[in-house]
Image 1 (cartoon, rainbow, N blue to C red):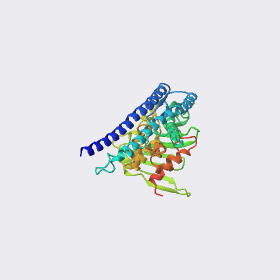
Image 2 (cartoon, rainbow, N blue to C red):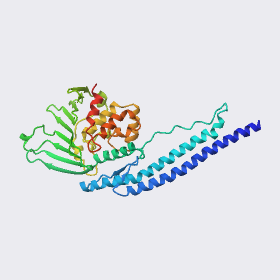
Image 3 (cartoon, helix red, strand yellow):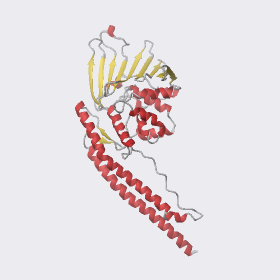
Amino acid sequence: MFGRAVTRTSKFLDYADAVSKALSDGAAHIGRARTDLLREADVIDRTELSVNDQWVVLVKPAAMTAEHAAALQKQAVTAQAEINPLVQAVGDADDETTRNLLVARAGPGGDFQVHAMGPPGPVPPVPGNEVPDPSTDAGRQLQEMVREQDLSTSVRETTETTDERTGNHIKTVFMMDGSKQVITTEGGWPPSEHVLPEGSIQVEQYDKAGNYVSDSLTTESEDGTQTTNIWWTDGTSVVMTRTPDGKCTGGVTTPDGKGGVRHGILPDEFFADPIPTVAGGALTGLEKQAERGIPGLSAEALENIGAGAKFGGPALGVATALYNVATAETAHDVCVNAWSGGVGVVGGIGFDAALTVMAPELAPVWAAALSTTGGFGFGYLGGIVGNLVCPP
């Protein structure tokens, strides 16, 4: 009996030693790789660049000239190439540790297979990657898209003028990537020149190549009904109304690909809850209200947009809020939550490309994003909104 006990405990000791060695060596290996990565990230963070939680090198938003912004974008690409091998080294160390644990279980741990109690508990499954893998083309493309998204929502400069003919106030917001959004507030002298009701707000969005992306307009009728229209380049449009008593309704119209159109009704959930933080305030120019869903454009929120701020625009804000409602309580929602905390501030819809790695069903969105002229852009959002709301 004692002999059998010694034999079994010896085998258990061998297994414990093998697992202990795998973990100890792995901790040392991962620790060294992680220290090198953190050291390089700290060096980058001391410049006009920064490294986010997904190890993507970004340009710090600040007031600057277009030439300086372009130079920093090139520096960010160079810095990314320098930090990627260090990111990969951490991944390699982690993979090696996992392999050593599996070997320990298959080797010394295999001696327990003949026992009634079986071997020690199984090695937990390897968790999914939480950052783009720089060793693959897809991973490097994801890094590029995250950076492009950040550049397209970081304000570089704003200018303000008054139209001499109409008296309208015009504010132009220039983004780090060269795109811009033109905000026009209807009002001023002479009233006879105004096409829209006084106080109406329009936001026109253009990509870095100067191509039209979206157009958002909020007007208010004499009876106090507020109407917000949003149009995208692909022909998709959203209309939302809110009556003075707070009742909100809306719908979506999108091309059906056959020369006609499809129509869909915005779900009640879209208006039931307060506007999400990620889709409100200065980030989108949409007014945040405590007890109502998506409202119209807010002059106060748009007034607060300045150099160094984040601004995605109302078209992105509405698309994000609608997308989050349509995909709530799904496996994809978990992925969105995981990425939205670190990749950026725009919201779930801005991370579809990155999520494709973990959620292959999003490949069509990834393809649409990659096909956008000039890199990351928002022109494809209209198609996403239309497909979510309008029945095929």
